[in-house]
Image (cartoon, rainbow, N blue to C red):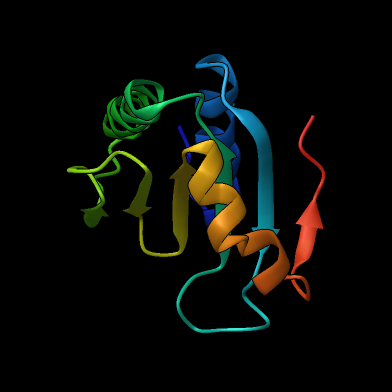
Length: 115
């Protein structure tokens, strides 16, 4: 059972890893903004992979009693944002990950080691 923002972020990252997502990063942003405590970012190989990662995260979170507040980007499957309140998951296609470059935009965030 996950019950705090860090555990939620780590659980989401675990699902990403299980689905073979690439470049998984957990950013602690709670001291920089009020929008969330953590961003969990990954890259899928293509649109189908991005969608599959999203589906698996939603399924795992619901198993833990946590429902997604909002999902953006399901139509394009190039960048899916999943809002879990204190944790926001970003699932990118390779091109969109490079274009939006959240890692650079949030460079002041603390990067948490993930495995």
